[in-house]
Image (tube, rainbow over all chains, first blue to last red; front, side, top):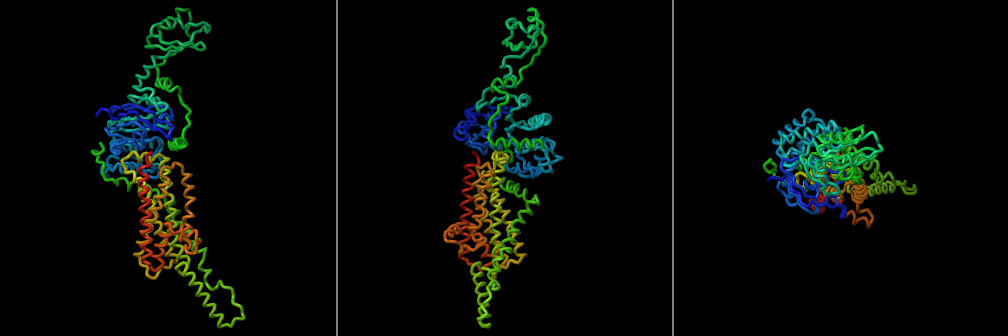
Length: 333
Length: 299
């Protein structure tokens, strides 16, 4: 088995006309961290719900660790771990009680689950708080508890839905480290959704960008950035009135030049080497450069390129908003 | 893979874990526990003692006889009326005091209100995402629903026991051939009625994400179900159009069985019929609940 996840033509339609996920195809290799990136309402969570057998697909199929999600849902359920977007741990129970409850849902015998629970709580550094009620936990602690719960059955494929939603920057980075640590310890395949670009960039080996229920780009983050066609250089010259676009265009490896309000936005290959040559060309024209910057393309730009917007204001269902608020509120703890 | 992980193949795994999760919320929270006991007690006090129906039927409420009637005959009449009214009361309620009649009815009341909230908890589980998490585990779909039913059943039985305990302490007069063994029958009746009722309320809530809807359903059903039964008042004195309703209302049968076992001399035929009705009621609705959970828990 080389592919942990094989998805073919997976489709979900809500209320007969709202196409949430529209014939998506992709595969995730064994041991890979695969990211699903997209704006709110793009179909990320719906996809995860289908892959984790919570929702039934309308069309298409998906094989999760060798089992079909529609035909053998119970086999799929036994071999996956899920960390939902919401904090699902029971507030009235302690951390340990919660994790043992998860174990019972998988039918893991108590003597095995006790040992695993201790081990996982140790890894996510919650051992000290295991007998405290979850309502006393901070957002980061709750996330870690969810991670531990999701791993109690030693899953082959681990699903993370927006694992750092609502966390502050430090806690987010800490959570990434826990995810990396757990991945190192247990070596499972990870499928995660996120709308934080730096998260996908930091963690994922490959990402798929999904928008309006369709996959619009798929590949390693670096690959996708390269596809954009090189680095971005911006420069200003002292004499605002003259136009040197053509002079810059003549430099080899310059792919595109745009002039806007006296600022030149230049797409170049091998930015570090090409930039000095461009500077020379500008000086040869008799102009003085007043300002210069060179940026490597980020996933941000890739995302922008494919989805058109940085953040789309989506009309979300009442329920999604409620859940998101509940999650955010608890994250703030 | 799953099997190698030591995952059990027992189809009922997780059922008790889910039930215990709900029960813990209750017994670990002393306020909730105390409140859920106090409420029926208040009802018992208000209905059973404040609405002292028995007092109406004592001879003392009769207007004084005209003085033209000779004294010995007046005394005779007085005694007759006093006797007659008490006979009427005994005939209507089957027992000498309303408190006894009513406090047993409160058991049904407790069961109704406990089971009604079991629908709410599935709505919350859906909204908070817990249900989705459970759905992604290999727990049997039926177990998810049955854990809620079981939780309601266990709570109903415990609360009924507490209510009956208080009723005994406050002067419930048991029937002539009451034995503590009869209580087992009472709890069996509570088991059946709470199983059927909670299955109904959960089935209504199974796809709902709005607790407002659920509240509306509860408000619509609770008092009609309670009053269109013999829990507080004998059905035979109710208007004709209401009689058919009381006869299909399972609360009538649970209350009748409980009264027979505690207050009355057991009419074996009637009692068998009560339990038969309750058994069929519980079986039908828990089956419907499980079928619906297979079909509708995952959308």
